[in-house]
Length: 558
Image 1 (tube, rainbow, N blue to C red):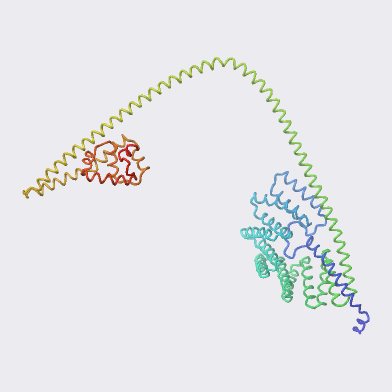
Image 2: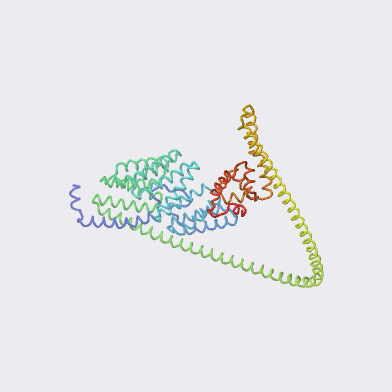
């Protein structure tokens, strides 16, 4: 009987297609409304602003008044909080550029005041805003910084919220493994914090990912877990969307009647909570279910209801947008007028102050000119007398300085002559001593060659002692000290122009600097003339002298 009645009232095949087309047409603006005004598919934090405020213009005026009051009290943190709320209100209303401006102002204050907790909330908002404006990289940057702050503050619910948002970013990029990973981390943090509502939202997010993957059994399982948690906490507002999702999954798996039951339940919950968009969405889902059940009259009826309500929502939201834009324009205009008036007052004040200062300066300058003229006449004679005294004193000082310099030069000359005499006397003494020792050694060597063998051992010992006397380094150190006093910085200049030199090289150079003869130098060094020539040849190589350069002339030029 039921079959026959169905055949009798069966509509033409074109009607279901028309209804499906209308459902699709009405679903497109529904998606737009959801993006602009409804909650996102992941956990919405409570920022003190309703998800869809009824009077955003009045709310904006109130927040602006509170902000001005906080500025008047010089309370930067409170003012930044109101800037944040204004940014959130404008974000919810779809005014993203203005929202970004207010949120960035708040962020600057939170950073300067080192308020990490409030900064994390602000970064979360900025990340959401960048996500909505299709800048996922900037959104991720904000989320990462907020996550780091929550980790340092050990706030599990804050971490969970950020994990959920990062997971949602991966879901939209169809990177489902990463999306699952972050959603599960969010679930773990909510469970650690015993945040049941947050955990229910994450179950719903995981179910949505499985629904995107067309794994409807898994999606149904997680939507059911979210449903159970919301029922436990009596969160009717969150339950509306969960029930709606359950209906969608059942409808997609061919269980049309069960899906219709959930859509009707979602409608009742939405009506109870006054969620007008959810009511429109439920009408649309019921229409889809009736259409799939071939009950096209009912499908058309609920589709009409959805469309009518959606038009009402459009109209109301448009009015809200216009009112908010008008209020925002008036606030900006008022702020500009206040800024102009403040600037004008500052300019007037500066002009008044400048005028007063100019008058005072004119009087002061006039008095100063008169005083200066009087003082000038009296001081000219004093200045001339003082200049004369200073000139005479300077002349006396110059004469004294000149005498002192002459005395100092004479003293230095005397010291130099004395040191030169000491050096010459010391050198001659060493030469005579060495000559005497050399003669004695020569005679002893002749005696050694004699046939008297019993005296050779003692004579040879004396000859060796004389040889040690010729090589005594102590006399050379004393000689070098006197030499450096006469020829100051000679060895320093020498080392700058040449490579490393031995102590024997320095002795030979010092003796050449004193213009001693080769015979005297050989005697002082206790060597023969042939050995001296070999040593001079080696020294020329160390000094990098060319074949035609004179060694003595080079040393004298240093």
